[in-house]
Length: 281
Image (cartoon, rainbow, N blue to C red; front, side, top):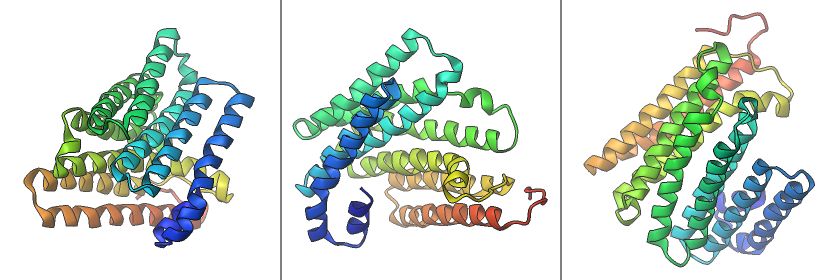
């Protein structure tokens, strides 16, 4: 999977055509084995997401770009939802709550299955599923409670809740037919991939990177700066699409990159900061 991403970024499409099918088979195989070894609803949901990722990769290799984009939205939606469901265990969600999650995940999977045959219907089904998922997450995610706490816990909760707003916005736009209108499609894609996905990354990175990199990353309130910049630039992108203003859209795109770079720099500064500092601006 990593090799395919690097090949695509470098423009190595011939290499991509060689390793792409292997990656399409490998990720679902690993996910399915893990789900069978440790059966759980989150595990099977991640396996379904891996299958959607594979379908998107094969679609991209066959020049079905629109279907590939839809499948990758499903992949990220299912993967993130599965991770949040796993953490929601602390709230002990009951049978009806889990049944609602299964119904939403099934609708996401159905959208991916329809992507190559009925693309317009698939995008609308995707929109309905994402909108429902945003409501489910906003209602049952632990972030509703942890946002009342302090420090890193509160920061993470704000990232999650803000991301769910963009998830709902993307779902509503696709449900309303955004896939058929270039600027509306652009707005929906940015709401999902930048507003939702990167908000999830901003929220989870301070928790995940310390264990991967084996470095201390004390919380700093400066993290709210790239967080605010990210969401402000997504709002600017929405405005640029609504007004058909190319210069505003371009400025928003540069702003996305600047917000991400600022986040990385803030994380790096936190890792290098001498211990014992306040960690606050």
